[in-house]
Image 1: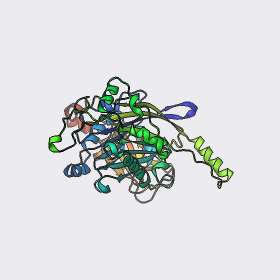
Image 2 (image 1 turned 60 degrees about the horizontal axis):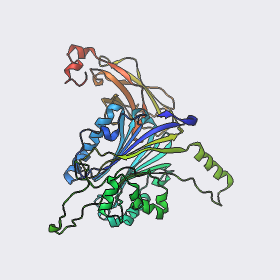
Image 3 (image 1 turned 120 degrees about the vertical axis):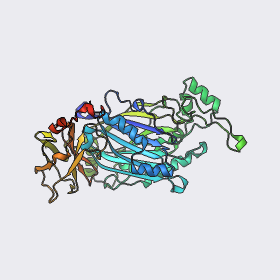
Image 4 (image 1 turned 90 degrees about the vertical axis):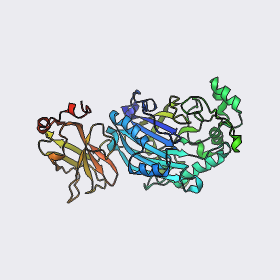
Length: 466
């Protein structure tokens, strides 16, 4: 995050949506995540549809992370990104990653989901969402998979409106999706290109005249009719339709007609099924009942802490062929003024740490936030993947909750400290907030004398720690 005009900060957001058609993930996600983009990314939000959700596979994924989450964590953790949260509903998966430095400023994280498919029972269609406060700004991300087929455009709009109305959060000032300052809506929205024949579609795509197709895109057409859709913005569709491709190719559907089985033998027409849109909360209209003072304070609040959203990129990545959809990527600059810039908890190592002696740490609660004696402080190796990816942890003081700014000292048993040392951070985890609310600066744990005596030098540990 870098500082922009007027003392505001710029956050870089990278969103991916991809219908993965039950495929296993590719080995390399570098292109999809654009890991070397400049300026660097602050937040990654990844929405997948049709993740393999057979009953056996789904139960396995509930016990341990699914294969897609592993690929993204393995790609992002070495770059300093931590998985903040995820939400899964059958084939729908939504992942939020943040640069480690931002973790203490991501608060009030909540996830939810809404089923719309097969009478709402099985969850094959619907929406999953995550909402959180980012430096005091309320953001919501909604990943949807809406009804398929050309003639269901109206049903798709109805499903989206149903999801917006049904999803609620246990947050007093943002109980619903549209109460958030910025909403990002994305997924396999399944809108098709109406009227045009297959030959015209393909010739327009091959000649690069995509603009000839925009007027018949069902989402663009439905936005003209539905006021609530008009609140959502979308960049120009300057990339090829992302559905439907032969797998492992960039060739549109060449499947042979299946009329001998009595099935619909039509090839699927290309379509922009996979989309990313955003909505900035409209300023409230002054009502006649409001007194002048109330409306003025609302306007001042809106003006004092606006979030300016600029889309920097909206494209697809044709290099991935595991699915019959191509992934869609959008990057944004969020320009905002931080409502707060101090963590809820300060945590620090004391003195030199090594496994040769017990170590000390201190923590102080800087403001009241429903701390709990079930909170804990984790020791994390730099490059950790999630809040639960700690080397060891200690409980906070159990007898009484701390006073504000009280410095509390905790001992860490030497037997729990890594023998080989390395770069680490301490993170204070709040059980009530289900997030890391304070992080120390990174510090060096020294290689212990015992490790040297026992020959546990890094070269001997399978070469991992060279």
